[in-house]
Amino acid sequence: MQSHQTIEKKLKLSIVLNGVITIVEVIGGLLSGSISLISDALHNLTDTFSLIVSLIATKLAKQQHTETKTFGYKRAEVLTALLNAAILIIVSFFIFKEAVIRFFHPVVIKSGLMISIAFIGLCANTLSAVLLKAHSHNNINIKSAYLHLFSDAVSSLAVIIGGICIYFLKIQWIDPLLTILIGTYVLKEGYEIVMRALHILMQHTPKDLNLKMIKTDVEQIQGVKNIHHVHAWCVTEEDIHFEAHIDVDGDMTVKSSCGLNDKIKAILRNKHAINHTTLQFECDSCNDVSLIY
Image 1: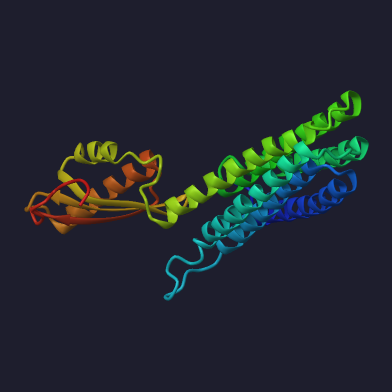
Image 2 (image 1 turned 180 degrees about the vertical axis):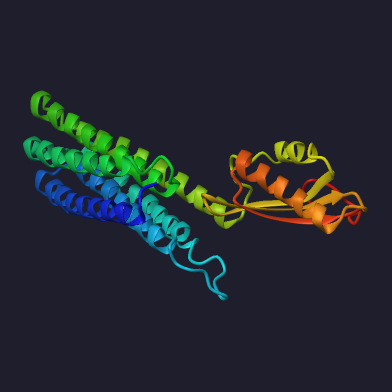
C-alpha cells in the first residue's frame, strides 16, 4: 500500500496545478469572451476544493482520537464537501443565466485564445489524474478526487472542440451551448455530492448494504436464534458502523459468546465491508424481534 507521504505529495502537486489552471482559465475566459471557459474554470475550482478536502482527510486520518472526540475529525470532509457542493450549485445558476443572455446577445469569441487556454487545462487535469490513478483503487477518498480530475479533463476537451467549431465554422452560439452542457454536468455532480453528504450526516443505511442478506448470513451461524434491532450508518463513506441484538440460547457461556461474536464480525467485515461492529447478546429479552426497531 502506498504511503501517506507519497499520496500527500501528489495531492499537493495536483492542488497547485488545478489552482493555477483555474486562475489561467478565468483570465483567459475574460480576455477571449468565452463563458464556457469560465464555467470550466468553475469546475476546476471545485476540483481544487475537492483535492484540498482529500488532503485534509488524509492528514486527519493519521490523528489520534481523544476522549472528547472519539470519532476524531472524520466528518470534516463530509461537511466540507456539502458546503463546496452547495456553493457549486448556486454559482451554476448564475452561469446558466449568463449563457442564456449570450444566446440573445452574442459576443465575438477569440477562439484561438480559448483553444490555447483549454489545452493547457486539458494537460494539467490529465497530469493530475495520472498522479492519483495508482492510489485510487483502494482509497475511496482518493478515488473521488481522481474521478473529479478525469471529468474535468473531459470538460476541457469539450471547450477545445467548441473553440475549433468557432474558429472554422464561425458559430458563436456554440460557446453558451457548451456552457449550459458543462454547467448541467457540474450541477449534477454538485447535487450528487450534496445527497451523498446528507445521506451520511442523517446516518442513513449505507447505500450498498443489504440488511436482509446480513440477517440471512448471521442467522445461518450455529448458536444464533435471530438478529434484531439493527442499526447501520456511516461516519465517512468508507467507515461503516453496525450494531444489533443477537438472540442466543440461554445456556451459552460468556466464552462461547465471545467466539460467536468473532464469527459474526468476520462475516460482516469480509462479506459486507463493515469495519466497526457492536453486538448485544441476549436470550429472549426483547418482545419485538423485528430486524428494524
